[in-house]
Length: 385
Image (cartoon, rainbow, N blue to C red; front, top):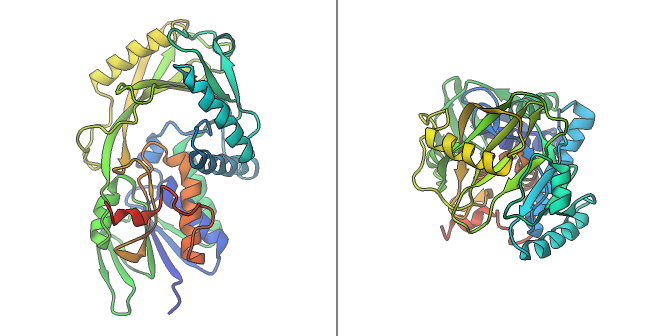
């Protein structure tokens, strides 16, 4: 029997982007998305929604450039609200500028031509409220921006449905087993479904789904928080997204972005692994006092020119992290009928188009031509893990 029935488990950005690519690339496929709650209700709706290309690695830039192109097209053709605030990655040492010049060249190779390096004075002109104490300048992408993760998922669901796919919400997977014809039987709270191939795009729950599928993934759901900064009055300028993190420092760095004229969204970024795993079903949904205190201190140091105000609310979400902090994408080595689309912790919105395209390619073409050979996402590395 031809493998025509594909079930995607997980209705977040990654799962829906996969379904959107599948239904566009091969309309004859029967594509079904199963979401335990409502679409985007997990990490996607709690994301700060940044889409940018200000990385240094060639692969990192390429997949993000595709993500931004994807969002640009949705903004132009589907009415997606993509707010182009720009993005600044601050430099903490002279060697950063060499990396940033390399980034600009690689971005140009991917069709992104407006990135440029800023010195201290140029950053201060762009962001008059900032203190550049300890920083030397930055890498600036004017066309980068942000979107609302929940609205992004809702639009992708609409596209999937329009292209012939189906999305079932409030449909939790409770059991999975092999059926007599070699396909996969998926038991849910709303009945049973048969799949020839299954995509594990369950975000923070991907480890549990992987175990049910007999295709385990060493995923660690980590808790991260963000906050809304309410100011007493509006700004005259649109503050770009700023990443103020020193790689390898072992300390969390500040990030912040424009939300509206009198509001910023801010949080703490760290690339080192955190201790412990969060339970995606029971984690605290508000920021801890420790998080709020640390964030408030860093905001006051880096943005002393903000109008009076403070943190009005904080929320938390799950970063589904892999052991090497790169997503698992493609066929699981323990079961080729299971495709991995998981582990994009903290980058799920902007990486979802590239992940979804690659998984759709493998299902339809048997290979992933959009990703280079030996790419760091390849799910076959689970063997060594």
